[in-house]
Length: 230
Image 1 (tube, helix red, strand yellow):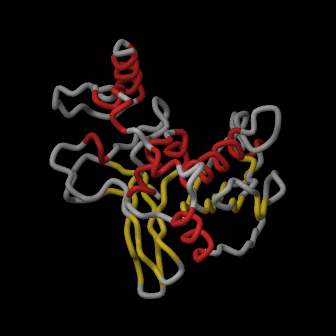
Image 2: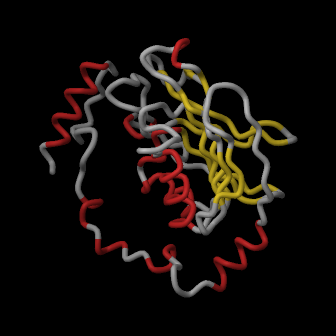
């Protein structure tokens, strides 16, 4: 949903909520808008923003973290959810063609399976299914999926417009046992954080502390500036 917050006047977030039997467990605001085209604000860019960027809820059915659509193209975002305790990773998306959920590209499936196996976590990924004729020049291929902690597809909706429902067991006990006992392919334990100086330097947006109005043109200018850092 598109969200405004009186605490941050002039700012619009792309947000979702995790809701349990007792109400809202947390609100997640998209950290990585699909720039330059999405002109929402990222909480990462707001000076003085103190809420957790990647919240996780400890629930009776497991520890649940969520990120929105393009966030999932950043392994760092999903790794941070896992570092914050997530066991089930929720992807809510309007992920579109041509990258979509079918060959020859099928980024949807590739990313869902990779994020599951590299974080030893279940992935529950819900994607919009809508016809191109209603939303030219884009279409959304659906293909919602449930993936286990080894990257195995447990359930998958047939890609295409319209509603599909997928159901699969999520065995939190098995996941916790695997995380506790695994030696090889225990990527969370094997992570050599100091080996990656790329994360010690600033990349996007420029770190001058200046708050800029969000627009398509401004996004493009910031992308060009960030590319100079490579």
